[in-house]
Amino acid sequence: MHKHKDKHNHGGHSHSSSDISGKKIFFVTLLNAAITAAEIAGGLLSGSLALLSDSVHNLSDTIAVAMSYAANRIAKRPGDFNRTFGYRRAEILAAFINASVLFGISVLLIIEAVKRFRNPQSINGMLMLSVASVGLAANLLSVLLLEKDSHGNINIKSSYLHLLSDTISSVGVVLGGIAVKLWNIVWIDPLITAFISIYILKETWGIIIKTTAIFMQSSPDLNLEELKKAVEEIDGIKNIHHIHVWLYSESDIYFEAHIDMDNIKISEAEKIYEETGKILKEKYGIKHVTLQAEVDRCKEKGIIKKHNE
Image (tube, rainbow, N blue to C red; front, side, top):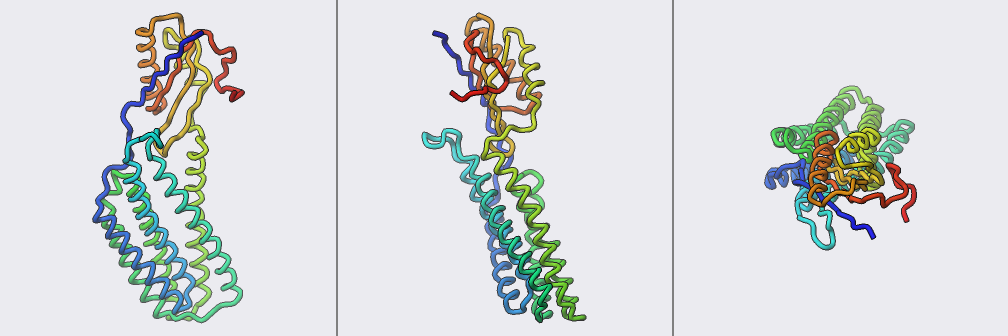
């Protein structure tokens, strides 16, 4: 009967986000919620689909900022008996839900824009322009509020980019309002809607793909053959096999494997664990390492285990 030694070299959890200013985030969330409500009302009253699509973008900002803040707070909770890995994936779940809902709404807006191209409707250009201008000013204020914090906080940066892109789309709606007011070019309204919606589709699709990959415990972009070679150069290790490597969050890589070792003392094995962990951290960015030591136990020595039994 072979004894197995499990070594957990987790190090410190490297949170990519620092503490978020609660008051600032709360204010930005309220501001964007107010813009969203105003643009929905303005879009319905003026008949502007572009204003409605911009309100959806503003809604995405409100949800993104609020969910990002809430998920960030939840993610800081330590692991417990129910969540031994902790709550870091709360941020990934929030991003997935937010992106999926926005993707669906954007598809519906594009369908509606196509209908408007075929059957143009009259638009109140002045009301459209007025509401869009207020939205633009509020978006600019939100961008300025979060600009400083966006440099050292990935959560804030994602919200900041949401707001920055919405500021740009608001400029488009303002220009559309001017065109409708001065020249009655009503077809520009669904055109702007389509452009804004396509942009949102592009951004949200990338988030959906990335978060799905994390939930599926996909491997990060690592060369496992090269990694195997590097580990097997360590004195005392004959073979590393049955490797599992996955993304736990956007920045945390988890790694576990069996290492076939020479017949050595546990005190000597500890040195090998440390050296292996150091190589994996410095060369491949892996901070969470679990190694199972054995001496000629596994018959199958492939990098990936072929059977799960």
